[in-house]
Image (cartoon, rainbow, N blue to C red; front, side, top):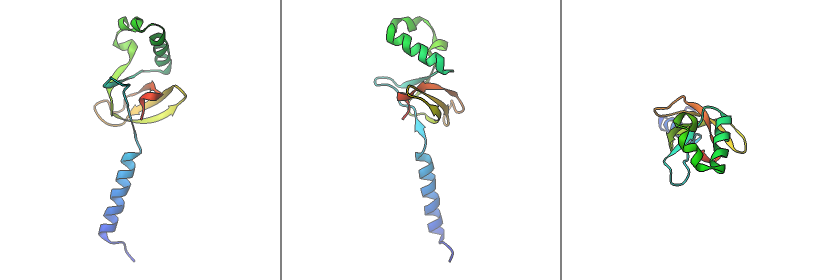
Length: 108
C-alpha cells in the first residue's frame, strides 16, 4: 500500500514545522532591543561583574570590550551552557555563523 501524495505532503509539512520550532532565539533584557554577544566566556563574565560593581565603568570601554549587539529574536543554536552563560552560533540573518557567548537568560 503506497501512501497518498497528500499524506506525504502533510508529513513533510509537519517535519518542517517541527524542525523550525527546535531552534532557540535571542531574548533581550527588558527595555532593550538587542543582546550583546561576546567573543569569549571570560569577557562576558568579567564585564557582567564590572557592571554589577559599577555600571558607569563600562561606558568608556567601547564596543569591542562590551560585545556585539545582535537584534532580539535572532535564531541561534546553543552549543553549550552552564549556570550563567551560553555558547551560541547565529543560524539565520545577517550575522549567520557568528560564534560567541551570551548570558544564559538572554536565550529563549
